[in-house]
Image 1 (cartoon, rainbow, N blue to C red):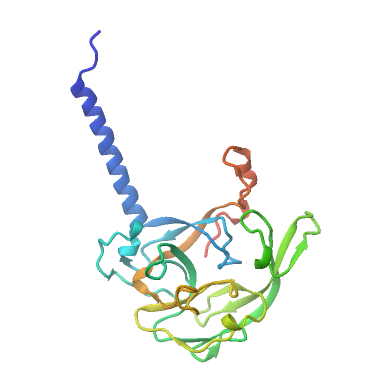
Image 2: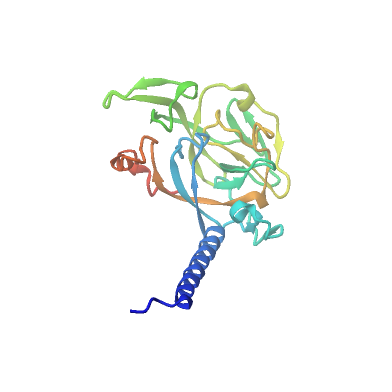
Length: 269
């Protein structure tokens, strides 16, 4: 029986390459303009976000810029279809120039706002943002959260017998009615007592919910983010789709399930 001809094999190879190219273009467009995945690398957004959380970010909310594209490919000049975030939105943005990584924080101040911290309370446009003490926040120690100096109070869970970290927790409510929980590790002069910040046009003021462990707009780079330009905002956090405590072993498939934090999947913002 005759072997397949060389032109037939070339045709199959070409069709496969064309298919893969089309697939890559579809993924590129979807990730750039619709939804993109994001993983949490730090604890600056506790208690809402844990290290090991995975979430989807919607890309259309605030318009598009070069930072909407993977690796910041400079194909979009400036910012198109731009819209300002709302106070309280959790946004993903590109860090300050020279910092090649994405960052997630909560928007607190918009252009024209003034912001100050007094005794750990946000003063927005001269008015204290309500901050009400609620039940302590606790989180089990795990490979993704080893505690140590980052844990203000460590104790043992009376039911499970596992070590847990405890934080003071407060409920904060912005003037637009947006409420969320924040953590406080006690008086931290450099973070809890500041001068007055004025948010310039085309920028936002962002903060982490873990107020005493967040390099945000209260600090200039490289310690923090400074004021974040609108064109560096990539999108809005919308829903968590997976979470792991970091104890899984890639070579032990059953640990993929035991390490998952199932109760965190599907949580919105």
